Length: 113
Ligand SMILES: [Zn+2]
Image (tube, rainbow, N blue to C red; front, side, top):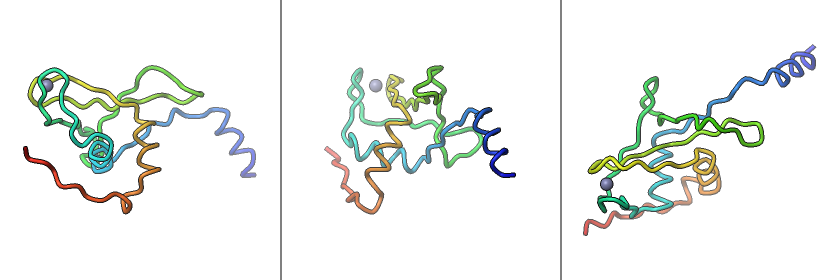
């Protein structure tokens, strides 16, 4: 009985919207590019947008594109100083997070130069 239900659900595969925790996004940005500066104004303060529905999650945007049948989502963060927007594929962020588990990352002190 369960087999037929599974077949049905895979055939009518609903679009799956990924979720990304705000804390994980911060961990990603600190891990990947802790000193990333805005290419326009050289500021290093960035704003990560929060989901309207859940403030523990990031706001992800549908890119309108699919890759291997999956909808591709982007996370756009913006420079707090000049508003320049930079975008990252959510899949790449999730990939990084899965290969860099939290307990293996050493907390790095921010340089306040
Ligand atoms: Zn800027």
